[in-house]
Image 1 (cartoon, one colour):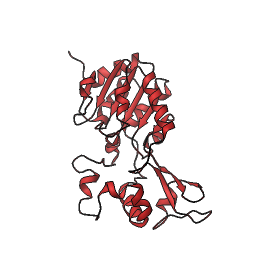
Image 2: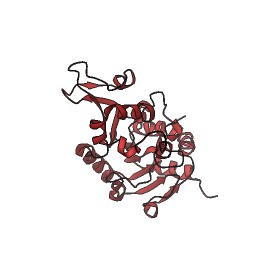
Image 3: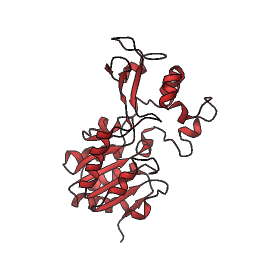
Length: 250
């Protein structure tokens, strides 16, 4: 009998020593956080609710030119403080505790990997959990945004506070990218989940993988499907939960 996807991945995980995971918005959809481009995703939702596109409102220029509307959109559509990790987040944290997973590289800004227990998380697009005063550089948690109205202000100098997320028009953190590249080059098993692999330069990390096996877990096709040793299009959460069972993690 042919192995199902979960059984195959569980075998690969058992034999791997240096696993790296690269994930996108689809990793968190089963935690109730919408992605951007799929049916029902953020881009589709916002066609009539705001006079600007999500790309415009999530840009650096828009933040500085119209901060009130930026925060109106940001609070309503980008923050999910009550969301909980799903089975994929938990599996990755389990594998890190076992010493098998070297790094989680994520395009997400929701902090769910850390909430699940992962410590080695490389956030290429930043995090909503970190916020910085644009004037004095004082640092704040998420509550400075969720517990305020309008533009959140610094308690030290009164300056406007900006989320530590990479907005359109901003550069990625080179130190995070360099650490991600290093993790990919050292890996003997790469798991890619919940990303269309169309956003650069982060998606190019997959093209740098040269060792062992590559598994892609995504509902829709990606530009890297032909390079994958295994394609999984079913629910990531269901597959991850099955893997956890097979590995005796639950």
